[in-house]
Image: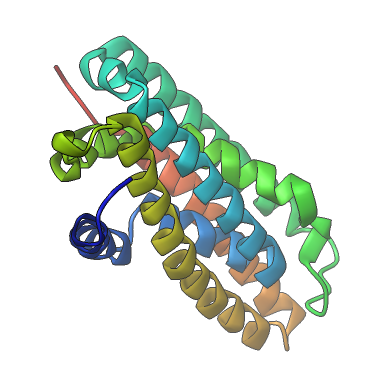
Length: 211
């Protein structure tokens, strides 16, 4: 297991990285604007479960393969980007229908929202590469159990991200509720969430490694 000093040092580094808005934040904000608080929070849970899978992959060596293989990195990146564009397009199309702000819009709650978040989280190659680059720096090889140490650090990262991303989603859904006083404005903000997810997907698709 890891020591308290390891956990504290990594936790501070992870917090600095997490609080800066990135793909995960844009994803949950887009979900909150498009579908509401419940879907956004469940999507956050799914997204962090995906991050845990990424941490597990790194702990057992898969992350190093992704870090070194341009083909594998690009394939995973494009799959994740395509899925984000799909989610954004679906949010835009759903926005044409009736919206009831008192409930989770369009019924995108429960396991379906969690699955959406999980697929986005697990298909984000930047998360795998980040874990592959950062987790080993906080491992104490003298303590043994390196894979378990790395997984534990990944779990700490996921828990911090769960809290921070939930705060972002609550803030965004609160704005959505305010706009919900006007059905037209709510449709517009839901469409903005869909466009945010599409933009995020396209941005991930065109950025990354060139080597």
